[in-house]
Length: 226
Image (cartoon, rainbow, N blue to C red):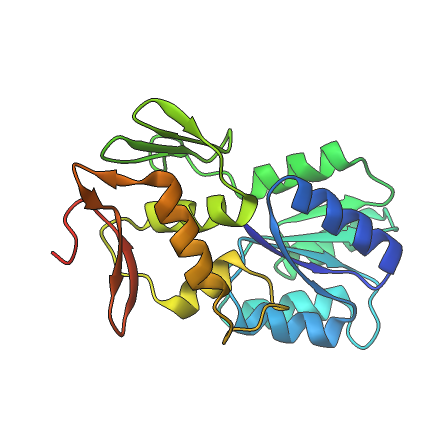
């Protein structure tokens, strides 16, 4: 899951980023409203964490601009103020939730879970391709009933491919969803991770699972180019 964190207080931002990364989230950061608004409008995120009292643009304005751009990404507002009218105003501006500072990380994670929750009967958190099984909730991967160790990036890469199994996923899409903005998009980091994941998951009945589609991207499937 990829999160945009817009917070001008560097100490709070660093603590939240490190805590989120420890929970296997991919985090992009912005330290003012102008930058946060731009990043939130041009990129795809699963959640946007937005401080209300920001330099250059307030959280309310950023929220409105993201909604006006047609983005429906869940937005959680952070604020040191606890006035009911302000909460109502921010929620009416397009925010999905509001957390008053200070707050516990447990509450913070619970709010993220709430705004991203989808019915279990519609979206499964367990993905399978042949005898390869990935559990998004427990961050476990099994092959032929044996547990596999994947790094965080390898897990995120495999998870995204399995969520879209049978479909070709472009290099740019994988870079956008698995890495943060600090990674050089022209580096070979994606190719290196694809190679490592292929080695760890092995083949299925002597056929590889992750296929390179020349000029288009990658696909995980039992049937190759079909």
